[in-house]
Length: 113
Length: 112
Image (cartoon, rainbow over all chains, first blue to last red; front, top):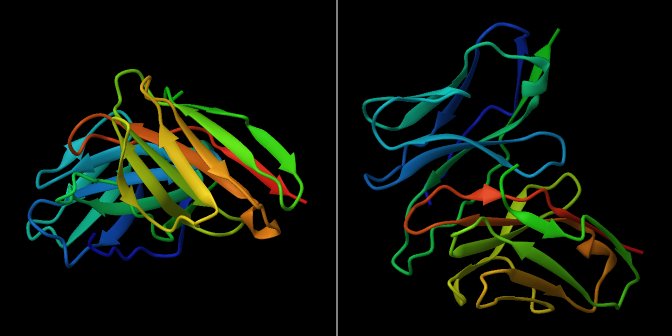
């Protein structure tokens, strides 16, 4: 899987948009960008994923650059409950059919009251 | 609620012992994944099964083994336990292809 680079930590004021960047300069054409978050020691929670186009769901928006070498996860109105570690993962389906996720160290987002 | 169920939620056992962690995937999901997260460590991929067959293997120790049964539930067996095996063990599941992977809430294992 392509490597990703994320800032170690970020702060965001409650109610403001949280923009979490991710670099994946070695991404291949068939690799998806996935975002998960882990709140304390709970199970990782799926947020959103995309291939080329920008995506939006009820939780967040994902902006992927045209060259696909970087992306930004946007939480439009951060709340205290969004404090978590956010993981950006590049995922593809291998020849064996395996398609597991490889987690990096992620970005620790702290939402400040 | 992701739909992935793991039991037990917490487990305390002594060194040298053997434990079994159980996972029920989301309804209809054929793939099951196991991950380990030690204290202050990242999530480490252990192994993946697809419809009963091993599909991928990660950093899984020889003392650990897993299987997926015909009803698609999976078990992770940890033997000759050491203090360093204390960790959160997550199970996840997904459907076919590059389908989204959903995680359970984990099983806390403490080896004393």
